[in-house]
Image: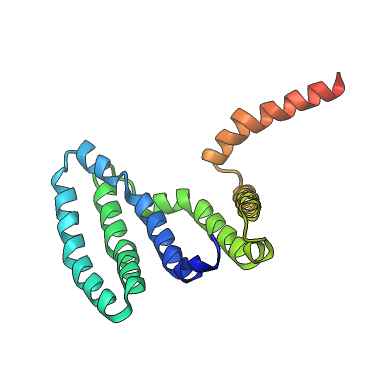
Length: 182
């Protein structure tokens, strides 16, 4: 977007992490309703307001827009996401450990992708749409490589990686081999 937007980078970075955290708990409300606990959303909303409002006011006063962004991020990370998951997992008897077992590989792959793209790829790319596209492709490749590597090193447990392998990759590989032999 050019040099005029450079000052917005820290703010957008914080809000991007907030957005990712927020996305992790977006569907929890549906789970609360589906398990017969519609009041849970109201309780969580009240708790969010009680903790968010003072931190937003203090953040705005002390640090301006960055303080507000940090208030939202910390509120989501420390209060809202954990509360939503605690209330959503209890009625379906799904433990946080089981959720962690399902999510640790994508979380680690995402962190590695971020570190590689932010630390090496983005600085090496021109600040153009083509550079952005190349950085996105590089990030996707790093994510896939790390995710698949961790899946293999974990003994290839059942999960989305196995579905992709069995439904798409194995048939595509077989088709390629048949075409090659023909």
